[in-house]
Image (cartoon, rainbow, N blue to C red; front, side, top):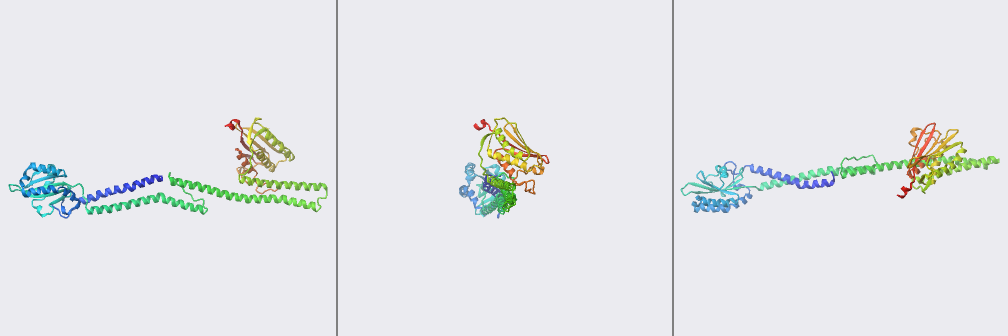
Amino acid sequence: MKFKTKLAITFLTIILLPVLLSLCAFLGIGTVMMRSGGQTTYGEGMRAYSMMSESIDAFSQATDELFDTIQEQARENTHRLEDKAYLDKLNEEAADKSSYIIIRKGDQIYYAGNAAAAQQIFSRLPAYGLESEETDSAYYFNDMRKLVKQIDFQFADGTEGSAFIVTRITSIFSKTFLLDMFLAIIFILVLTAMVLTQWIHKDVFAPINRLNLAMQKIAEGNFDYMLESEDDNEIGELYRNYEDMRLRLKESTEEKIQNEKQNRELISNITHDLKTPITAIKGYVEGIIDGVADTPERRDKYLRTIYTKANDMDRLINELTYYSSIDNNRIPYNFHRINVAEFFADCVEDVGLDLESKNIQLNYSNLVEPDTRIIADPEQLKKVINNIIGNSIKYMDKEKGVIDIRLLDEVDSIRVEIEDNGKGIAAKDLGNIFERFYRTDASRNSMKGGSGIGLSIVKKIIEDHGGYIWATSKEGEGTCLHFVIRKYREAEADE
C-alpha cells in the first residue's frame, strides 16, 4: 500500500473512527441511563421529575405557560376545564410543543388530546392528590420517555379530577451522561491513537529501521545483508533500490579485489618475463666484454640474441602500456571505412613471411564480395589478427604448423575465422581464455612467455567495434577463433 493511500486512510480513521465509536458510546450510555432506575418512583418506570437531568427543563419550560393557564383555571374557573371546545384549543397549543392533554374525571378519561397514546399511559398516571406532594408536580416515565405534569381540581359536581400535560421527551443529557461521554471519547481517542501508532510503526518505522540496519552493514563492508519486500509501495521500491545498490557495490568491490589480484599477477608476470631476457642480455654482453665471442660469427650470434631479447622486452612493455589503456578505457581509435578484401590481403602478406620462417603454412580464403566494407580502426584490427596468430604460433606443437584465415559472408556482417593445428584448448578452459591474465599453461613456460592479456585485448577491441568473438577447440587437433563485425552500408550511413 502506497504512502498516499496510508495517509488518506489515516486521515479518514482519525475522523471517522472516533465519530463512529462516540456514536456507539452515546447510544450505549443513553440506553443504560434510560433503563436504569431513578431515585423516586411512582409505579413501574415513573420517576420524580426533580431527580432527572436539568436538560429536561427545556421540555418542561416549553409547557410552563400552558401549565400555568390550566392551573389558573383549576383554581378560579373549573367549568372551563369541562368545556371540550376550550380543551381542544388548549390541546392545539400543546401539540405545538410535542404534548397533549388528558383530563381525568374520577377514574375515567374525560378528555384526551391523543386518544391512542392516552390509553397507553392512563393506567399509570399518578393518583389524585399527589400533585401537592411534589413541588414540581411533574413525573418522568423512563420506559415511555414521557414527561407528565399534573394539576388536580374538582369538577362542578364535586367529582375529583386531574389535568395532565403529557410531553414526549426525545433526548436526555444529564451531567452523569456528559461525564460518561467525555470519558468514553477520551478512551476512544487514546484507542485510535494506539491503533494508528501501531499501524504506522509496523508499516513505516519498522521497515525504515531494517533499512537503517542494512545501510550500517554496507558501511561495515558486509554486502550480503539482503532486504526483500513483496510490497508494491514506496518501501518496496526503496528495498529494491537498496538491493540494486547492494549488488552493484558487491560486484564493484569484487571486481576491485579481482583487479588488484590481477595487477599483482601482472606485475609478477612482467617481472618474470622481463627477468629472463635481461639475464640473457647481461650474459651475452659479459661474454662479448670478456672476449668469449672471439670470432666474428660468434660475436654476430651474440648481438642477434641481444637484439631478439631486447625486442621481447619491448613487446612486453608495449603490452603493459596497452593493458593500462584498456583498463582505463582510453584506447585511441581512428575509425575508417576499409575494404575487407584489401585489408586482409595486406595482413596476410605481412604475416606470411614470418610464418614461413617458422615453418608454418598459411592458407587464406576470402568468400566475401570484393566491394564489402566495414567501419574499423585498421591499426587496432591488425593488432587483433597479430595477437591471435601470435597465440597460435606460441602454442604450436606440430613440426609442420598450419594456420587458416577465412573470410565468410554473414549477410549483414562478415565473419573471420583464424584456425590452427596446434595443441588445442581443454573444454574446461575454453570459456576463460578471454579473461585477463588467464593462461591454460599455469606453469609459465618461459620459452613461450606472454603476459596472459593478449586475448583479453582482442576481445576488448572487437567489442569496441560493435562485434563479438568466441572460440572453438579440440585438444590435440587445434583451435579456431571466430569474430564477427557488421558491414558498412551506404543506406544506414545516410539514415
